Image (tube, rainbow, N blue to C red; front, side, top):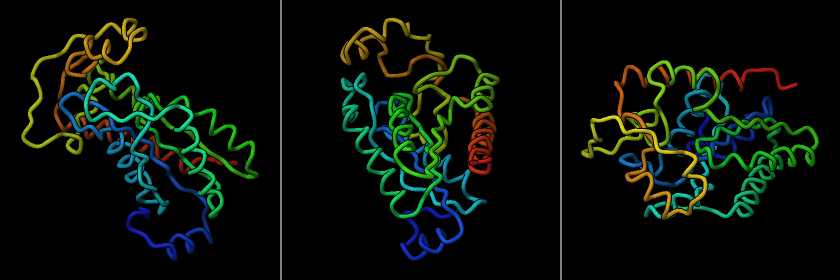
Length: 234
């Protein structure tokens, strides 16, 4: 595996002599209740890194900011405008193409970033030979089935995002199961209204599950992501 952060340009150029695949993780900086504000970036980059490890495919640093206007009442959250984000992603894809990459797997860690998918389609249309796959890792079929097998009450900032690498040391989470918020009510209010409705930021569910369950889910997610890298790109 070749993390771009741990590589120099000579090594990337040598890699491009025999392969043109890479991974671009997308994250977000936003509230995750008692977990890190960087949960989505941490998870998307680690999934990408673990999936690419045996294949030697370069993994770029996660884009740390995304689309999260509904959480702007929670300090520490950063949200880009849709037009800004679309331009950023397009510029990154252009840079990857111009330097030799043709097959790009986007590993997305934040549901709010999904509106950028048409940008990827437009980009492929404009770039000869370019391929771009958009992968929401946590809700891919096999991964989501693994989550549901542990507990069907799982949502944003709940146990399903509580891994050893997203917890904050010395800050324990509540022991109870939080009832689901009313998702229909979330759709018609501003950030202040969302905060009033969801309280600490967990949309519903327990705050933590045993690490044995979490590692099992993680391995499913890594394998499912790796399958997209290894699969037929023709």
